[in-house]
Amino acid sequence: MTEKEFDLLHRFILERAGVRGVWVRLEHSWQAIQARTDYPAGVLHRLGETCTAAALFTGHIKVDGRLSVQLRGTGALRTLFAECTAEGTLRGIARYEEPVPLALTPSSFGNGSLLAITIETLAPGAREPVRYQGIVSLEADSLAAAFENYFEQSEQLPTHILLAATETHTAGLLVQQLPGQNSEDDAWLRISALFETLESNELLNTNHETILWRLFHEEGVKLLDQKELQFGCSCSRSRVEDVIRSLGVDEAMASLEQEIATVHCDFCGQAYVFNRENIENLFISPNPSAPGSSLLQ
Image 1 (cartoon, rainbow, N blue to C red):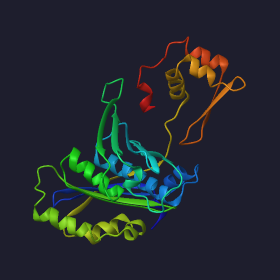
Image 2 (image 1 turned 30 degrees about the vertical axis):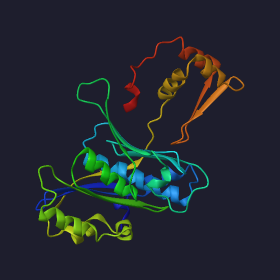
Image 3 (image 1 turned 90 degrees about the horizontal axis):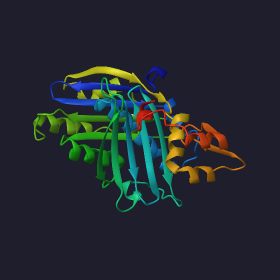
């Protein structure tokens, strides 16, 4: 596999079967995401799968802003969060509580855990982004199965997803029946059987053309567009200022230590420093941007 095939998203269609799909591979972007935190192996792999899923879904769903995937609960795994923008920038983070089980599955989030997929998109001519969110309970044996359940409930479209992650790279494949098809059609049943023959190791170590040809060469597989992916963070000083305003003046002033408050972005490590005068000015100056306008910066 050549370096040109790293950090890419490929869309495709199976013309004879009425199925669409997306293939994703992350390498340099994934290494940048994990570089700032020493995650336990199980947490690292689940975060890699979540980042890959976020990228897959931007290839499947029309996104003009950003799409985020969040899994949250009260167990050993507290949060998995990944975000991918229409421009192909990715970021992600995980929260967990020790001790971390060796095998981490959706059950590791504990009772009452949830899966949320949020799309923030800016319509043509609009000044503020529109936000759409779907939430389902997190009940599955794997993250891939949890995402399949999400699409079954939210879109009522049969979907197959395979995700795999190591410390160095990740990969994912999604196939979904096009609207208007019958889930009992022979074509979808055939695609499902072929998809089940794909193992995680092959997905991780084989390029997209080889995988798609092996699985679907009799189904009229046609490659569509591709998109490069890279690590990128959407944090900004203005967004941090909005967070400080949301605390209220008393709590914001209490955050000062030796007349300085420093806020670090958990995703990229960028430090934002505020002195007393900076914070006071936040509460006497009008907010220059409307609520939510910073979401697409």
